Amino acid sequence: MSLLRVARIGALAIAFAQGVFGASPSLPSDQAQVLQIAREYALGYAEKLPDFICLQITSRDNFSQKLTPSVQSQGRSPVPLPLSESSGKGDRIVERLTYFNGTEKYEVISIDGNPAPPGTDHLKLVGAISAGEFGTALRDIFDSRSGTEFNWHGIRRIRGHRAYAYEFRVPKEAGIELRDVSRGADVEVGYKGLVFVDAETRQVVRMTSTLDLPSGLSITAAERSVDYEWVTIADKKYTLPVRSEVMLQNDDSRYVNRIEFKGYRKFGTESTIHY
Image 1 (cartoon, rainbow, N blue to C red):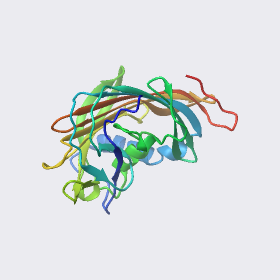
Image 2: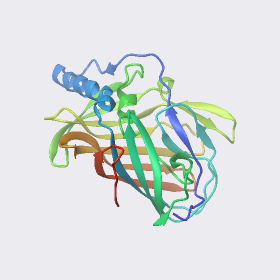
Image 3: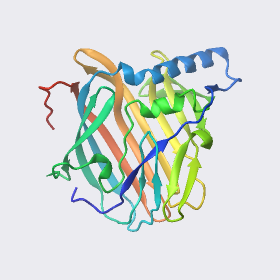
């Protein structure tokens, strides 16, 4: 990118209060069992991942010429929110993503085909930025302290396979803490969405989420989806993100990030990756 002055991004984080895993008591035993298996998978997901590197390619589109953002955030589980003004066209960011000892590290390689300045920080790029696709998003939903409520949503087909769909809702008491800069106020918001569990593998293959935003904030909508598929690393298969999409909107602007994860390979001191 030619560093578009679209919006400075802060990390939006989920801070959990004490609670219990909230599968709906109305769920039949077989649906509850599948959900419990998916929960155990999600909570142990990050620990099962190998050390790896891959390319993260983000195509960002801005559908407006004006932005009036004023929201910051604090905590964990990054999700993007705009913080300062701008406008502009879309851009394309290529990053080398390293996953080592359960931690994600981003190295910005190029912006709109031009080499990124040395030391460019992933989370300090102007524009809408997202993170947390590697386990954090799932863990936050299934964490036993979140008080998440689950309900049956039906059977769907995801990429040609049967999947069990569950609605979930995280209450604001265990949700996301937002700081509205212009108003100088802190706001807690919940979020809701769907998790899709493969009928055969019992693994989560898609997750979508939407923030329950109150009126009066600069952001009027924030949504994210992540698709997971089997990926081979060092002759072993793992379920990893392959696509993600983030949408942010306020009264004047709408931002859409379409993210692809490619070229997964085992991380080592000799590892290289080409694009």
